[in-house]
Amino acid sequence: LQAAQRAVDRLPIGKDAYFGVYQLVGQAQIQTYAGAPDAALKLIAQLLAMPAGEVMSVERLKRDPIWDPLRGDPRFVKLIADAETATKPAGQP
Image (tube, rainbow, N blue to C red; front, top):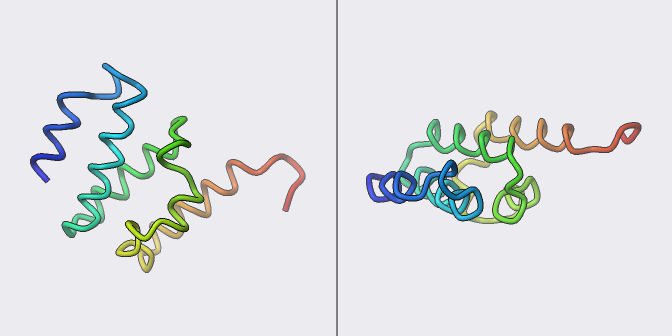
């Protein structure tokens, strides 16, 4: 967890918006497997709110096995549902 935080600190999004996103996704993945779901979910929400589609998207969250430890968490399910609703074109169910 400390190494992931150092990586984010060395290349924050404010310094490099492209590669900084990769650092945040990596940190969220590490937090997921290290048993820190609260921190991981906070980062996932942040990533879903910004243009990070190449490395973080609803489809990746739904399919990538790295997120399996979060699948039973109602907050994770809600993040996906909310993001899907936000990205649907107007008039689509």
